[in-house]
Image 1 (tube, rainbow, N blue to C red):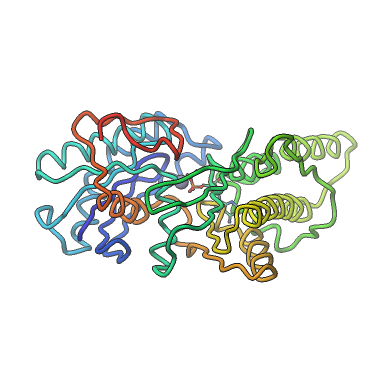
Image 2: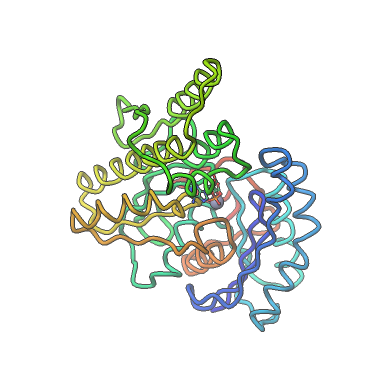
Amino acid sequence: MLILGIESSCDETAASVVRDHTEVLSNVIASQVEEHKLYGGVVPEIASRRHCENILWVVQKALDEAHVTLEELDGIAVTYAPGLIGALLVGVNFAKGLALAANKPLVPVHHIAGHIAANYIAHPELKPPYLCLVVSGGHSHIVEVLSYTEFRVVGRTRDDAAGECFDKCARAMGFPYPGGVHIDKAAQKGDPGAFTLPRPKIAGNEYDFSFSGLKTAVINLLHNTQQKGETLDHNDLAACVQKTISDVVTEHTMRAAVDLGYNTIAVAGGVSANSGVRKAMTAMCEKKGFSLHLPPLSLCGDNAAMIACAGSYNFDAGIRADAGLNAYATMSLEENVPENP
Ligand code: KG4
Ligand code: ZN
């Protein structure tokens, strides 16, 4: 089975051809990060325009590199939610046009289901059910992966996502966008015990997260130091931010795993590239005897191979869309069925 995946939910225009669910034949990514860096974050209008400019050659390159023709495809999978609405619309409309012209089934994919599926590419032995920690720029979820296409979200962020917190702390510290990776690098040289940062517990759901207090604490610490004319070691602060986020996401995931009876765990999303999160999850899973699956660094961030992989499983489950498919800026992973399947 050959599935073309198309991804345009944020600032990466990506296309990929995947054979039999997990064999990646091509994985093309046109990143806009250098341009958005000038503004300290993603500018939605610019993102949409760049997707329009890039999508045709990105898809063509993905087909060429895979040595696959449009006719040979079994289906065209596309991210339809969640994300920047203008950005999503470019991918969705391109995929709709292509599916119509080539007379191929159109398969809608939820972006977070895509991130989760990145693990199947790297670890074909991983099979549902298992528990997945999803940590990205827009989401922090603890998800029961019930099947390849069914999910139950048992923990979620009440405010900022883990990646958003990394990026906002990094911005306050003067690092360029996206700051998560800069915190990761600086943290290697810092003391994770230098500062005590807040680790809020959420009344009512002990698997939920809240990261806005951590971000505020970091901003206040930086302001207070500046006002006193003192300097603060940014490597130490980066190490403390990373340790706090890594510990919190790991503790909550472990608690959920024990309570809900899972001993197979996966991590997904851009923040799964973070060395602190990877180390903390690895150490805790070893201690508890859980089997842990981490995506390779190349598949942690946004890419279309993960969309094609998730799309292959959606295809198997009979999930289809027609020319009426819309894009959605927000969409729960649980109600992940488009209006007109
Ligand atoms: O999954 P993703 O590529 O996009 C969304 O779907 O949101 O995640 C992007 C997020 C950004 O916040 C970025 O700073 C963060 O992942 N990120 C990292 C690292 N690499 C990417 N955060 C911490 N450490 C990293 N090494
Ligand atoms: Zn993403």
